[in-house]
Image 1 (cartoon, each protein chain N blue to C red):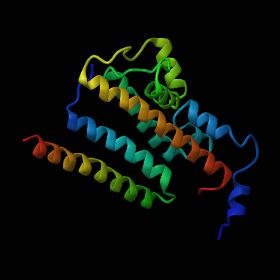
Image 2 (image 1 turned 120 degrees about the vertical axis):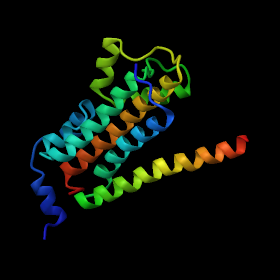
Image 3 (image 1 turned 45 degrees about the horizontal axis):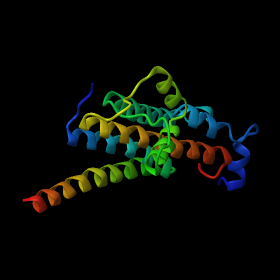
Length: 59
Length: 132
């Protein structure tokens, strides 16, 4: 059984979803890569920001 | 400069929904049919990877629709096409989520199905010339 940490699961999810978004939502390879990276940063970044918010609220 | 009409003509003849159906049944197959090898490989690896990691995390495969959430989960799972049916037949995945990672795994499987639908529609758009 595969048991990744919560953060590893977030990174894997972001990686796969970003690749599909990049390939399907843009037309040229350069724009695909840029949009994929943009989605990846947004996925992981928002998870980190929300995690800190929940940590501070729970204190 | 290629116009939209030229792109439509380049798309060729035949059953226009074939890439859509093939892409739904097998992740990336719609793009492979259109000779978009790179895009197809990326989509195939991403969707297959997400689905298999979901299974490996003991994610649940929705089998029936008892309430609205189950119906939505089943709709997402069905997006995986043959992967879903083969996994059900092989008895993969969990019937009930018993560990935390199983809950993540269930989401991975549902999202893999939804991403596969997006990929299949993209293959259809390439086929009709709506996208280059």
